[in-house]
Length: 342
Image (cartoon, rainbow, N blue to C red; front, side, top):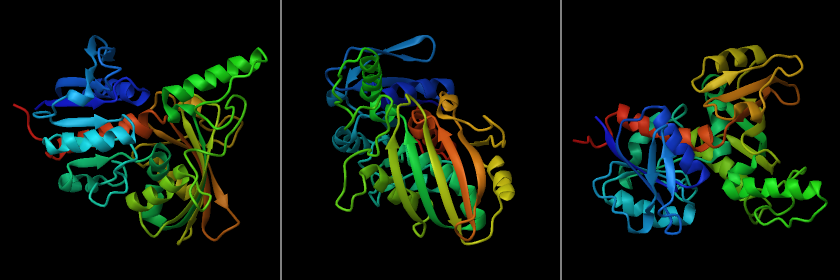
């Protein structure tokens, strides 16, 4: 069987990655549409090695008869057009934050909670989690199943591509300005990002937490276990692609670094590179273009009972966004949940 697939936000960094990932993984596409805002309509984007798509206007597109739509246009746009697509009978996989905490919308990482995908029926929408949450819960899942997690403390080091093409452009502009002793006033980020780190991603909430940090807390609970306590500090760093995290975990049951290493090596979607030598770990640069969550620096945390520490990195445009969405679509196909195309 093959399917009619629409990619919404097709001119953005994640939208382009979705098109690339669909082609690379051989998703059974019968027809594909690239959709974006009216100002982007008429542009061309690639699908696979030899196909070019002309971008169509999302606002006037009729989703009737389309099987699946992968959305990544921004939360305010998804809020309007994802329900419109869903009501037409098209199953929506939304990569924005808008539907993630809706109790009638499953929030899914296929390596962690694929069973929740089948719960999409109430709204015909499935939510893709935040990029930083995805990579963390992929690594936490096998450990939680065995040792039961009580508490997670995480510090993230997130690349500028998490803010889209505009964030990447601002890092480039800031860097150039630095070298010519010029002043390039930041517009995307609250402070200069070149040769700097910024301890703020998204806006602040009343308790001093940023929305990015809040997302990691509530999404981890919804995906993995509502009993897990989570606190996060999310930091933007001058890296183009690839998020990194230092994760401190306290378990209910005793765990050794060796046991954790063995479990993680066997876990789906995880690659362990944990050599206690100089360079024996994975960095964001090495994760670029890769599908896996890479785990390194696994060691005992002696400051709490049953504590463990590890470092994980992943390509935030792939596993943190595009790949996870495509994997959800693949599960829909495998479980026979997509309407069969003629």
